Image 1 (tube, rainbow, N blue to C red):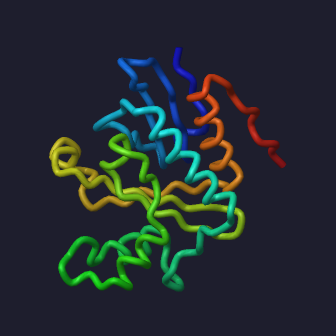
Image 2: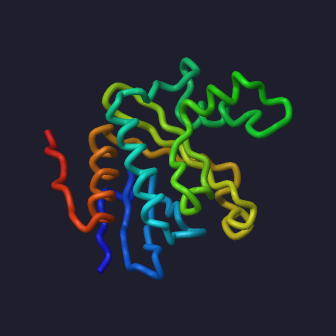
Length: 176
């Protein structure tokens, strides 16, 4: 039986059946199904990566968008301007790396994601990047999806995802 944690319009995970040492994990953010290309996770590696992200969030090290006055989507575009190009400077790479997130293995390597903090809220920006995906979904070409979520809620979703992978489940955070 599948277990869903979170809200698909913000950030959610659905953990399903096992298949030869892998487990189905579907992720959504901003109403988009992120794991549409590969939703079978190697649990040990995936769990560790998710937990590392939760630890990073709890540490408070997530920064506001680096460019004054830009929306999260515009900041994402700005960070990606020279990404992977020969003319990308080391400073540009380091700046982009400070905000880069969702490096959770093959299940998430079809999206480029950045995370920005605004007080106790976060903005996750996502862009599908695989050519095959973009051919199947031309409406995603160049599109930047933005999910806004309370930092505490995202930490809870990630920690609960780990708990489900471990065979236990946390209680949802108190809402005010």
